[in-house]
Length: 122
Image (cartoon, rainbow, N blue to C red; front, side):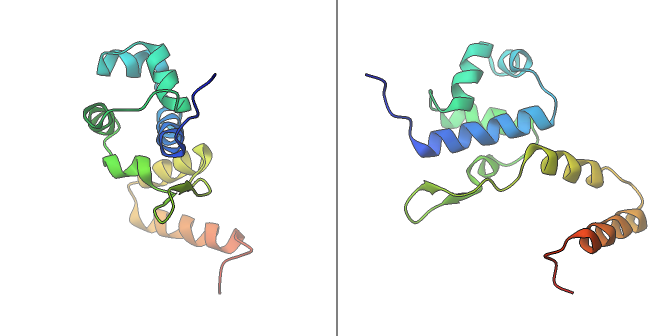
């Protein structure tokens, strides 16, 4: 009988996969950096294996983010997983915008995005 995966572990693993692929880091490279095999990273990403607090902290350091990033999008009232907060494309776009040095260009790009959003309040 296959053990049921905890929805929180699945969510945390999904967030790991999201940031790893957005940053274009291979399973092998992430595994090497934290001292595990790429197969172990795959198990983390699917929620088959739970990520320990110390390992999650090390992973957060590698990606220069807070460990709380991996829990964003959880509904804390009943630990059900909410809809994903960000897609890979959204995360990559946000990171690319953040790398733009010119503040005015970033502001105008944000205005363009808002203008293209049919749900934005005007």
